[in-house]
Image (cartoon, rainbow, N blue to C red; front, side, top):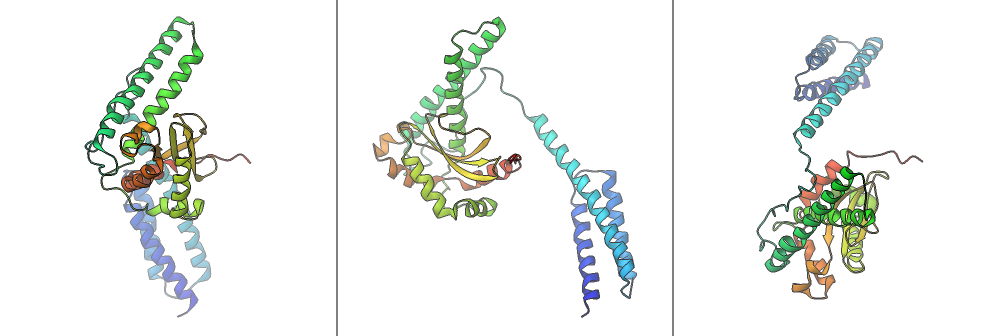
Length: 300
């Protein structure tokens, strides 16, 4: 089989796949029909062409590149419209209007790894206190802005950071666990772990060790570093200290004593080891897919 014939067949295969991709665009753009007609017409001309003509096929290749460039512009606009639609459907939380989120499972669903009583106290008492503290700080700062007079601003900014980080991390923490959890991640997240940590086992070992060595109360957190384009493992004392800006949390582990002491007493390591059995990797993967859309230039 000649290389000329193979080239022609490869272009025909590409055009057929290209046409299928265009048909899959949900948005009803006039350009979509025009590009599809162009791809189908080019496909028909190549089928009709018998002998290989280098000049003819060179022009066909140029036409295909122009169609693909137009296709990218259409898909970019379609993606932007979808993002705008999603953002317009989101409602911001009013100042001081944060609420305790419902758990996506029952309080006893994570047993035997995390007992019901721990989950009840953790969610109803501790998380609720962060929601209350965040609302109080937001309302106080709103009042001070309205008066144009800021009293004890250092205290209220600290309260905003502490309770806000506590509320947001706990909200993510509940979602990152499941009675059907455990195992290993799959897909792009697993591939990224291999690139950044050398594999899941190396990631798990570092994450577990980091969580065990957090001083006092705090967190171990898998994050997407949008500036360096890598996964990283961070720790946070309390909820907000020793962290980084410009990262997106993907998987947090709460190692405050209230998260495990009633069941594991001072054996934090056993709690960490058992926690891996309830990690909800599909949710982590979903956050990873969304987070990786944010990738800033490192400015180096």
